[in-house]
Length: 443
Image (cartoon, rainbow, N blue to C red):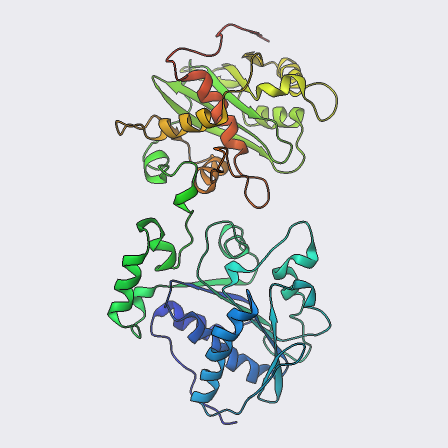
């Protein structure tokens, strides 16, 4: 084996990804035909020779590995005239530079055991299976556990992928909540000068407009086809609308009592519009009394008058009405909520009488407030409502009309709280669904 010049990428993100051979985890997320496999095979070739220890290649299925990854690596080896050997044993192996490269499908995470490697290449990482319930079926967890060979000079996990929506471990670990030493590079199909122009035109013609950003620009997007609220746009409903609490107006608190997560919103009706001003989200096994204290700590129950003094703000409660007869432990949730409100000195009104509105109608109302048939927007969200904005962007809709809770069962709960509030304030018959003076309490 002889030393060869290190390849250069033909677009800046690809080149930066190629040259990032420091310890950690590097991601090259790119559009179709953005050179992900080409760059990853050559970078893997370099790390394998540098580390002088075994490596690992992983694809979503064995078919993907043998159709795409193996040919890409073989091409990278042949272009520099390096010898290699492919052996299809129980665990297939490609051997070059005196060390093996194990080939394992992510379909079988429990097979990532009994060996150590210094470098790993995962292709189409956004498509490999994950599991919160069973560690042995969580491919990313099992794959990472192998990256520990003592002889490796640079321990690195490489992931190449086309994005596949917002709810993937790739989106989570590199973008939403980046892990330490996780570095991302995003390539675009249109910037790959090695592609023939007609390839890009063919892709543009075959993709729906809302997915061009994902499959050609390498940026994950929500799947508009099944989004519950596809008309939600940050530029319209968040950034362009600057507002805050208005003294003298009551606040409306929408409460969903699902224990994980428990999500509440609060806002004000301004004319025939609704401004969502804040949220409380308790991620794991939240209790109503804890949510009440969190809301109180945020100052929801008080307002500042024009002369600078403090006074109670009237808060109208819009609960999940099924909570009047349901509780995980002890008293029903709405009973606990009103008891805590009184103890905290809130001025509140509202009740849990009646039944929840039909799910489909409630979700349709949220959509209509976002954008009605006349092109008008009447629902606006303060930037501090991070979870609500995220769920408006990412939550899908099931075939039965309800919200899709997502792979972890956590989506849509805060949208339920918003929906209960809007249903009371803006009913489809044009009336008012809550009694303004019911269960009024002043501390």
